[in-house]
Image (tube, rainbow, N blue to C red; front, side, top):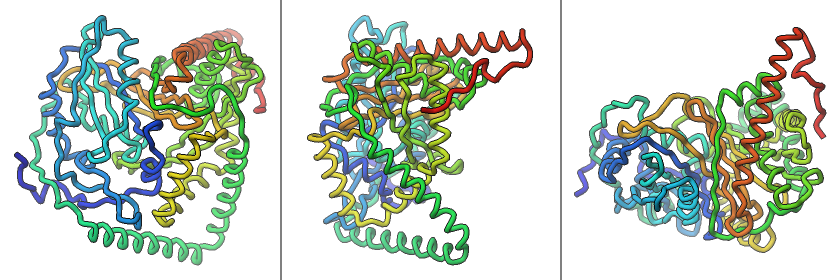
Length: 499
């Protein structure tokens, strides 16, 4: 029985338009390239019942109204899709339970993740699922989460999950807030909402043009930066390459994961320079170098370029569930054998990319997309997706996304979360992707790969861990040597110029 609506529950409007970037993830998806993000969290035992987990989600769903909304498309695509209350919302459909075969080892868990993540989410329902996974070794259990990329990017996806977790073991369970769905929108309502949205978009454009009139010098500076960024973006897209990591994908996935101590990565950053993200990219590059060598290819002559998403989310937009990302294309420098030199090359490359204004230009294009006709954007995205099956893109070989997670321990129903491994989708021309997530004192990474072409994905995770260990050894040696010798050259070696 569905309780009656309490008007004080939420002031969220019954219909919410997707931003253009959110909608693009719907348009570009197909059976071979499901575009959901996700994660696997392992917990100490005992495993809770499905009813207990469902009760927890029921109590906290009021904090995430979109978990009870499904996507509705505007007739003739005269407007962007909207989130509308699901009149048949069934929490039991979204909270599922499964078990690993004995002995419940890591290989069995990875295989399960690959199978679950290979399946598309049902668009007739809210675009999320959670799976309770029992039977893990050492008396542990896991929670596997799937959320469509149209709903969240990496940062807001992590925020989504933490909404259902607690920062203390004995946190009380909230009371279930009464809820009933808003009436199903008619075609006429969807069309009227689309027209109102288009009006608001163009009023925003007029305000932006008025700002340009009031502050011409500032707008000229911004326009110059955007132009420079667009030139760099065009160069990146036109700089194509080919290799074993590029090509078509089919619908099944392999998954592997690993971890490093966050303190070790921070030690590397402090001793050898760069940002934490630079160190992560250098480690990921070590994983791909290891894969190429494992396959008998010559990594010294290889080029592996990665799409690197960059968050443009304002600090006050945490907890807002949508996509607010830009991107750059980074050469991972797998041809550089020495991991420290590789770190310096990547550090210089990322500094150059940030200074090129590509991030600002791509963010501006995403904003501009909100003003484009939805039918045109949807048709173009679907045509590109279909064309990619025959001619996959060659501009980059992989995707590497790094998400800062919570720094404190988290709990679910009193059980402590031990590990948190992220999942990133792949697409045509993109056979491998790596997601990195920090949690408490751990930096975890999950690698997604096409089942038919990259069955040796574990080589990448091993290579990442080995590269972190190698960088850490140098970092510690440099710190000891610096302590013994006093002042010396920064990082104990000359800087390496970007190639």
